[in-house]
Length: 494
Image (tube, rainbow, N blue to C red; front, side, top):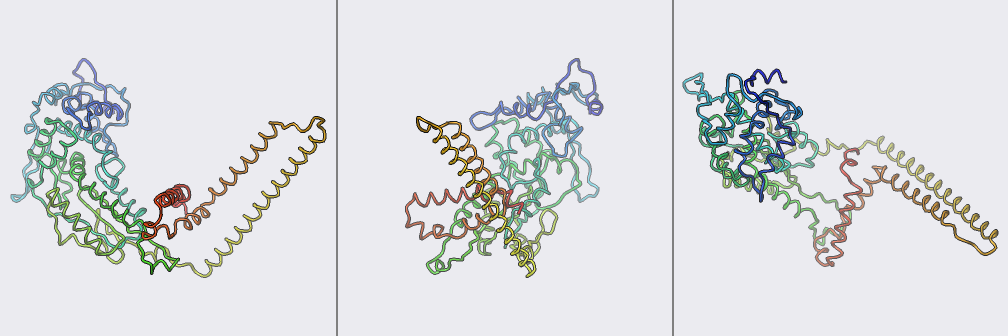
């Protein structure tokens, strides 16, 4: 590592600068936080030689997770000047005094054909500045993004998004992915992006630098197309985090839609007719969303009418609030079970419940009944053994007390030691019973299924006629049932 960095950094300066670890860089950024916003990040953080040197180290040895700094310790000492290219101290001075000349750091390549677009590449000095800005923006924004925002984040890549779709989406019926109209070079609304950044970061110099990067075409955002292999401007990690910042407001509105719909459909809404059937099993409508940069997939387990309403609201937010051009013809609703859909370069299709959970054969049913009978016999034997042990212990305690009463001339004197021993024994038994119950995943799942199944207290017309204390107590009881009897780990094991 040190040898690699010496190639870029040289050894002309009399003193050394230390690179920053993740925690030190985060602490440095948080010192600029006050009253809900960050300020003076360009002068007080990005322009520091240690931050620029950390960005240089990331470019020399980029980690797979694209973290803000390398995994090496902060005790690594590196030179403070760049051999024949530029001086880190001078670069930091230029940035802090707003004298950094971005256009002079860009190299323009002619297109291979007359109809093509020229490609603008940054030199080494500008690459370091872009990486330093990315590191700081990652600390400011990464923890603020919603959970279904993937791409350009540590541990939130393409495979993580597909894993979420596979493991968490249940009973999908309809879905659609948003198709954007391809935008040209100057159609992306940079002013709107800068206004979004200005809500969290009060730093006019930093926002001005981001605008200049877009004006020089060294950083660019293109929707509605796949432009891979075109160099650093389109594939820079700074573009990914800027896209996430641009879509952050949209993500939060989608999250509000999901929570509101899940709250409305979390309880039964049956009529008196439906209440006569006591075996009703209710599955609430769910809405799922996954966004990987500019690729958006929305899934629902409800009707097609609901999916159409959801689609209209999503497109209205994209076109109205973000000013994006959406291809409404290609943004079509598909059946999750019978039709395939393209997302993240893959063809996705939901598996029908009949295929995912096929009915049991007669042989399997007989084997299950036999297993349940054996389980009941074993549980009965264990219960009988416990009762027998308790009876024997009770007889021993009674005989001990009777013996002490016969031997005592002044009457029976209670011994505190016996009381402690008895308490400890019974406490041990209680712990064993609880551990045995919690260790049986099937028994916990059966109790959870029985306690959380359709109940008359879940009916809307019944809840409205009952006291609020009773309804609140029932809801709290259901929360405890979900907490103790149906944890996620137990469900995954089953």
